[in-house]
Length: 139
Image (tube, rainbow, N blue to C red):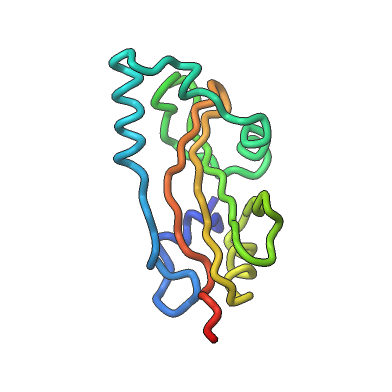
């Protein structure tokens, strides 16, 4: 999906309100969880515990990837993006397009996008990255 929120990570310019500042990548944490799973210190039920709403979002508005699930290796991962911040519901807002993310950024409020990788088959889920959307209001 070319107009996905994730596409913005590589194409944003400074000053757009969608800048890369504040981006956090959770690959090391992911690697640690998978290592614990492979060593037997964690069981599959511990890591394949996606909430039903997350699985629903993955199937309906998530961005398909070509990366196989690191647990079951039978399905490809899906990225689901949520934005949290002022003016949004406490449960956040699921984002399905770049245009939707740009509209939120134009509000000028400091919000955060969370991208979660999900396996719709086995339920593996892990926070992949976060990044700022919009700018903090200045006094």
